[in-house]
Image 1 (tube, helix red, strand yellow):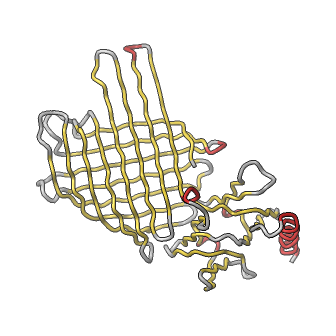
Image 2 (tube, one colour; image 1 turned 180 degrees about the vertical axis):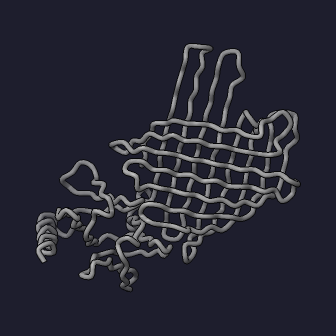
Length: 337
């Protein structure tokens, strides 16, 4: 009873000061009451804004005992269902979701994502940019790298883009370069299924790739989706168009693909993302390609981060005088939106 009185008192005092402004309130497991605006919750961390703080609060979702909101959210549950509506804690300890006039109940642990839906384009956008640079006197070696990601999420779909580039130059040695980029679209279906459409590009010196363009379409499903981890599977068909830097003609082939992705983000300030995609060729006998990526990101204050990434590309039938594998380690310092 006392904690509910504290929440109501805090809410009353705030409204008395700010008139009819839309406000949310939190009761934390340590008994603290915070009144302000819930910006969202992702990967087990809730972002909360108050007028008395220069920066938003980052609060572990498991440390929130009760929540009361007037803010409209895109709400995602662990079983893949999505709603637009408000959330409030109930007397039974569960969370009440009100969406389009319909009220339902779920546990706090089942809510894995919150995103405000009544704001502009920028509120739905996510972005990160990491840059690395090194230079040594020996042979005038210089290396520059960029690792970036962008995302936009709506109620029923999301789109993501990435751009990674490494360039290395050294006296009396041919320049080395590597570029990989991708644009993907996901349409969310019931029961954690999604439709996937993606176009990706790869260029690297080691495999004599001027440019490889892969267009693919398929289906995927989230097997695990919680506030600590998500794990998903995907599969479908792709078309591979390759242009090379040596004398080899261009190659075109049809491929299948299947892959898996694991994201672990409840490890303090450390996040781990890894995925692998296998491409068995449907038109070139015996050809098999594999793309593998792992990123470890350590969060710093003010939304800065340090990231260590490793990427491997394998092709058991490369062009003449090219390597079967190309891999890269990247260490970058960056900032995320």
